[in-house]
Length: 300
Image (cartoon, rainbow, N blue to C red):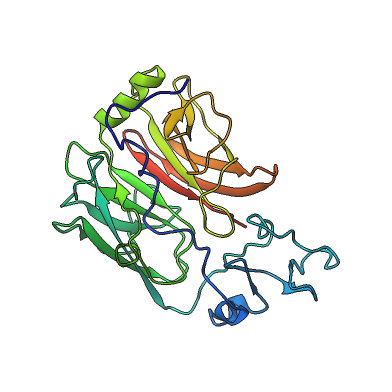
């Protein structure tokens, strides 16, 4: 079923997340090896630091496997070679972004905090809380290589959010770069979507929204997503031609898709690209009455 959204930008921008994918993190091999001892031997391949070396043809090779086999070129060439090493340097990195509502109005007073990925209630936050200013802008400084999540608590009636992106190895400023802001949603926004696709909000469930990216950090078409948990009221959709479509089988060029009314818990979202490769697998926290945002980028 293809539906039109009565509330304008309801979800179209909602999955441009707090930090871009950690692709486009390098232009030469030295950009990777300079990240520290954990990156020794890594090479820069299509903007991503990957494990392995380069063959005589310049194609990246995973040295943990048969080095006679080269990684295919193209937007999915890094699949199977992505490395997210732990960082022990004690260095810090900062991410800065802006949050708006579906009408693109900046949201003041959203409280953000960084949390460990194994701390679903954020009982031991990684950072102090920060609050968005009148322009909806906030900045968080976290340990380099941070791979937890960002918890956002906005003023009512906007819904709390959990934001998950690839590990942060470099400072990122989406505001300065002119990137898309993070979009906050309300229960009314989710109600509007479900009313159009057939269904209603389950207050005991949460919602998972994703944007799929390829090895070059570009939005990826042809990606199919699968969550490890589904309930009787769960509905999945992908964007197609600017509209969410519950009959679509994969993402269009926007890379946008999601699932509403997912049972709370640790949910593993897997992504397969247009070549049929398992390119992403991330476990995220889903909580009742909360929106979880995920950047589905190539992962180890």
